[in-house]
Image (cartoon, rainbow, N blue to C red; front, side, top):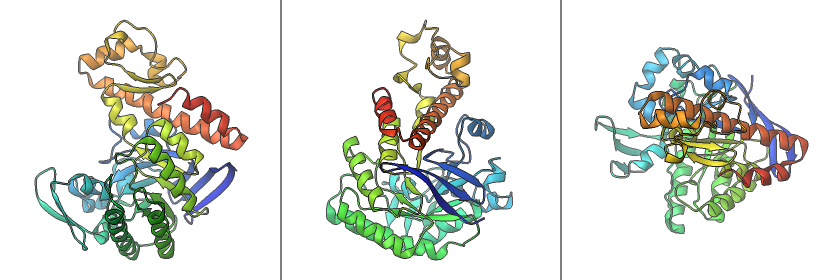
Length: 367
């Protein structure tokens, strides 16, 4: 099967589509739960699938350091290793080394960094990043890039973008093409539309199976995030999937879908779930707050997930205060279900031509 994007219907700029891959079809717009180290934290893979997720994300940096990409390859690849037969997208590791600002050194060749695990020195290059992702058997491989910090002057943003584009070419040259597998280039350019345009022009000249919008959700205000997402999506080819990296809150996803973005990932539903924060149809609930101690209400009265149909806010707060592992499992499950339900509702709204109305209703309630 060839890797391809199928556009089914539009509503304004929003797109209902399918991404066909070697490991199955992804209905878009789609939210990808983050399984950084070969697991979506606190969740079994079959439960993640049952919540509606069709694709998950793994991470090159973390799996390279532990347990090692060659070990994963020798054990049958990441799909078999973690018992996830569906599509997997792997982050190139660029964002992780970006976040190690005190432990890394940039050069034209790549990024030299020290492991956060044991302090050993490594050099991650576009070629090595692509090789690692191939060993992991990633359905979607990401080009290696530098994540431009925010704020950045236009001069700094340009130099960063141009480096990422040179790395994109090296990543593409190192990519081993296989039926049903794809590689996405990553647009950079910070908050400068002219740089975003130059970036996507360079990427389309190279040619990728899909295009990601990078360098956002790195500290800029929401209005700038939404504005630049709209600018970037308008610049991206219409016949390929569009992926907004590292985003975000439900409100961010809604705005981005309305701008024509197809794919998203974010650690918020899992990471925040483990910290006691639940995303609901009534907004965000911090279950550790004393007001929920005696509450017999579910996390979300409008939700029919396992957590909401079996447990009260009072019980979940008790688990959190008692430092019980079950707390993180139950709130994470709810959050992932909530995110998938939002995406399902947006897909249905695009299909029926009611996205504007549905989006307005959701944005009045969700964060």
